[in-house]
Image (cartoon, rainbow, N blue to C red):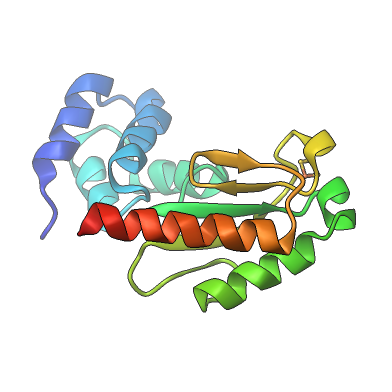
Length: 160
Ligand code: FES
């Protein structure tokens, strides 16, 4: 296993090893890795009372858990009714072109993941895009394109 298991050990120490701790353990792993690496799940099963079917059952049942790696920044385009009417399709298309990836994919450099989501709960601001930690409202193709360009430039600055 190439993974640093001390991180998993810390999570198990903090959360406990009983079957009822499956959700907090998975949340802890995802907070650390941004998704649930298969090696981490196997390690949990071999070091707790949680069986593989219990753990994988929980991991696949709840939409909050991701079994595939995601980018450092997740861009969520709301496609709920209000945002759909407000032009969400065009926003997704704009982002697909700018990032060079289709919806629900991650850029090869693992910096951005683009995903369409259901209503994010602020319909009065439709159409809405969540760019990393920022919720943007009344978004136009131009506005999201500029916001992404600024984010990419800042990101590059951080990495320089
Ligand atoms: S439909 Fe987009 S925020 Fe509700």
